[in-house]
Image 1 (tube, rainbow, N blue to C red):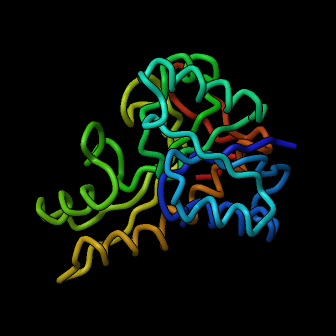
Image 2: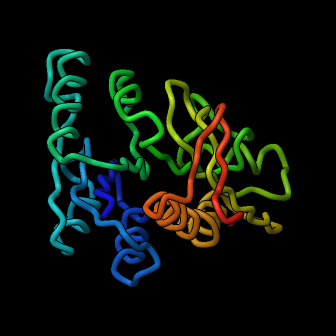
Length: 211
């Protein structure tokens, strides 16, 4: 049974998608053992509580230095003994000590088809604003492993979503969530929980050929 810890900063819609997938059996061989947020007012913590999942708030604002926060943050994560850490809209930079310790055991959902509209400054609504400004016809979402870069780790799954005429950034954001993020994030967790994801030379192979 894979112990999954979810890190989230806001409303937790991707967290809810994971919870629903575990409870419905879409994700097998995995359980959510804890949710960590940097924001005490994050609705994600309430979602966790409703499903009997321990929720913890740890914020950089409560520490004198980022180094002190990073140390406490890593300690908090370690206490939950995760096999897999899922970044589901977590807006805090992951300390290098953590990416090193949990190499190929941290995944992130990003609301674009990497390498488009990713890297520093591209998060949340900003991604969709940039896509519409560029006039692209297809957007989507990517689940990838987290390394020391920003959105640079090995790609696990991607799903495309069509841009519709007259889309606003918020409309596009919601469609990408519904059609891509909430589908491929649970799917990636299920694949990892069932030993179907291998990483070699910075590339992911899905055993059994699932896309």
